[in-house]
Image (cartoon, rainbow, N blue to C red; front, side):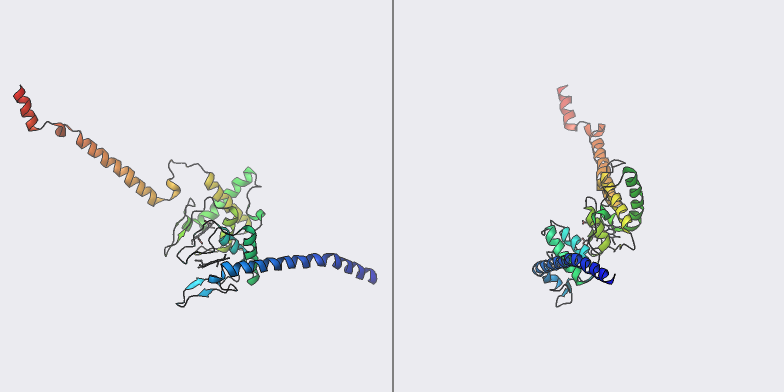
Length: 274
Ligand code: HEC
Ligand code: HEC
């Protein structure tokens, strides 16, 4: 029995061990590749080991990255926010310059610096498998979460809005579901961090379903004006509403009997003819 036990254990080890070793070496290769890319494109601001860089005046060129996790890198580089071009109030999204493979490598490198949230699985954020009923339920639940947690900054229709110190919360309509999930998970810039303990993965997917429904919703109540809220609507009321009233008043004034009365000289000329 002992011999058999040893044989089985040994056999199992022999078949399983090389696979895991290969996996680790793959992971190591990925981290090494990520490190190369990081040294070239990111270390200028984030330091060679992602420790962050301070300028001589004590301002931050780039924050420390240990513990931000793979999800933060996938979000920041995947939406083109990183590499940042210049330090400013906002890190805007722009066309990304790294391929997804390179982003995965960068993410593996940053994840190797310290534990942080991993890149979510497609099953976490994709709403594609939902039946129409399930989707309607998810939208209703997600709407509740969205209205209590996100509208303060991103507005009721997800159109975004101004933030303190010259920043802004961008529009979140038309954003890839994966990046919506990662934004919640990692809280970029001044956005709050909605960890999985705070909003569990299923609820994050509900929020995504709700944001997707915003894109499909027809504009009840006429012109949406970009869903920007009272400022845009007020401006519209002033310029178009009051403007057309003023125009109408001028038109009336130009067409009354008083203004169309003939001038004295014209009358005199008519009198002479008579
Ligand atoms: C010009 C400087 C600069 C470069 C280059 C740059 N970053 Fe950044 N990075 C920043 C700054 C500044 C922030 C902080 C943004 C903020 O929160 O306002 C930041 C934030 C981040 C964050 C989010 C950190 C967090 O706490 O969530 C990640 C992840 C990141 N950078 C990764 C990268 C990667 C990967 C690269 C290279 C492809 C890169 N950065 C290149 C300046 C830079
Ligand atoms: C305190 C204000 C604030 C709250 C609350 C907030 N956000 Fe944000 N959000 C921001 C800011 C600011 C950014 C831009 C960050 C950047 O550019 O790096 C952002 C970015 C995003 C993005 C990325 C958009 C893009 O263009 O890639 C998504 C998606 C997002 N938020 C979703 C949400 C959701 C969903 C919630 C609610 C669960 C939420 N946010 C709550 C301020 C906020």
